[in-house]
Length: 289
Image (cartoon, rainbow, N blue to C red):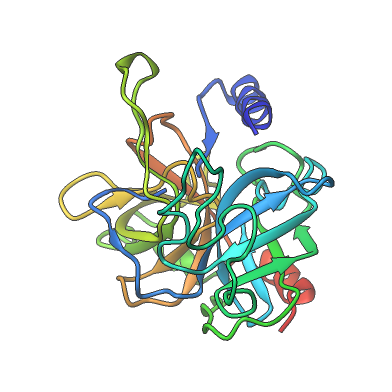
């Protein structure tokens, strides 16, 4: 995973001369997310069944989890996946054991949870993700088709071009999004001598729309800011997680968490828009409903 991330970062830096990296947990003023039971912790495995990386994802039907393209990167080695929908999916992870004894994360489904809270997948798809984040159109969306249906509810997909109404400066005023996911909540400077903090549980936070039309967005991405009182952002472990339009009770997913500009997850976040007509067409053509 380290080599994959470095390759991604170096490719983008060479093209845009900025530090861009995929984002993997909710930071800032976050709260436990018990509002979205259909948001899961997605673990990916290689051809040998070995853990390679983790992301977040959202059920958009009983069978289909929406995530990021760089998560469902089949060319990069992802072959199968397992999705944990428990809010505290990895909170009891024991580094000495190498897994969570309560849920089985990231190795297996705990007894009695497979088919109810934990699901496997043999089918991973992505929107022609090129293997690195080629901005602005990153193609950073993917699908995980479950081996059996999940009866947990699911998010609503947007109408085409729904976010276009917020493209003007006036339109960005007071537009709120809710981000949700699993992973790092505190990331420190390497020389600080402090460990990063990951609760490995589903958290959510409110973010504000900044821009849809900058060179990094260009109609493909949304730019949000999670700094300030009452707000939060994304970090390592949230990749592929949902960006809901509206407050905590919203179920309308309009984008998936994609990348950030700050390696310490303290700043502006970017998510890939799924309300783009071509992206929606691809989702409807490939998802299992």
